Image (cartoon, rainbow, N blue to C red; front, side, top):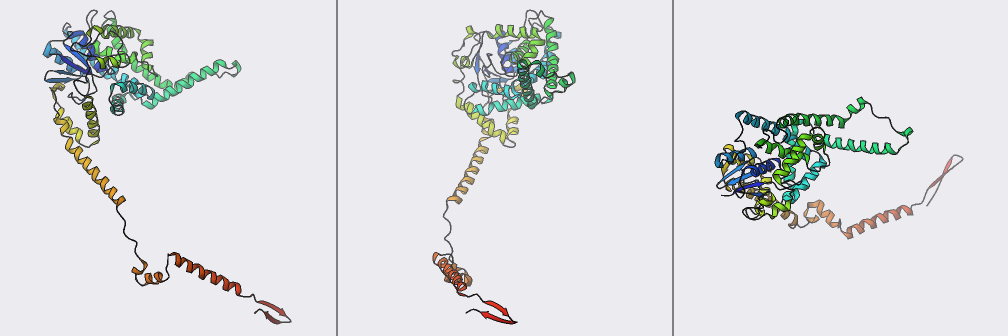
Length: 448
């Protein structure tokens, strides 16, 4: 039976945009015989037990995650890269795998997702991989996961964005200085001023993180003639994992290349190791069209990878529906706990999943839709229903009858009021002024 490996699709000239998927592809290339597996670009995260890619379908069994997949290959098919190594070397594989997961993976997430400029490019790389409307939901959720993974580093996206702004300002200042006369050139900053700049502090912290991550790996590589991490002649699962992360750190042409520049300037041996491994294991540069156009049981092994279109396996509509259901599920309190409890398995390996966990959500969705329709209908009725007839003044007791007699509020009533005001004005005009003249102590009145 052919093994079906589902991964995130190509990006940045690599077979996958995700380091775990890229490591799994490299492992399959090195150990699984040609014709025994196919590679499918997918966005479906409803099938795997851990709700994430990569995942492997092997008959009735579905396994997800790099470590769980290679364990399944070892126990079920005796495909293992680590068989030739001694117990001490196997211990090194375990230790350095943990090191790569806890240090290298957060650095990569910081590089691809944290700063606004780099995330914009990463998001655009996801767009051709995703059906509508998941282009608007999946990249932000991926970024949220990445930021949660890098929170312990203490470097926020705002700090990286500010660093980029200060670097641009410094570059503009350098350009301006080159065209000004010497007498107008500003004095260079002092050491204390430079160290207090925000961008400088952030660069120092990033450089320190890169060195802490790469020094043990470079030392391990130098012991084996700079070809593989544990052996001069034989790669291991550790090589697959480390090379996948470093390739995504080094090769993408990101606007902020602080991670790639740190590797190139201080760890050239690791950079040569990555470029050599990418050429040997992945063959050539890959684009999304390669993954979407792959056909046939054997794929295109002669070109490096056995791609096969995943549309015939799982329809686009299923993937879109799954993404929408997950978005609604995440917004409902308590539903994530229900679904998680139904998908927890030992070693993240489970029979090919049914729709039981998803069907648990349907009654909730139907109830929510019905409630929304009822509220909308009631509001529409209140807007469109005819209003009551206006009440007459004569129906409002004695006072109302008086005002009704005056035809208050009508055009005739208003006319009567105006006539009465005019009559009062005319009466005032008819009154004659009375003058009083005092002469020899006698008052005389004049007037009509």
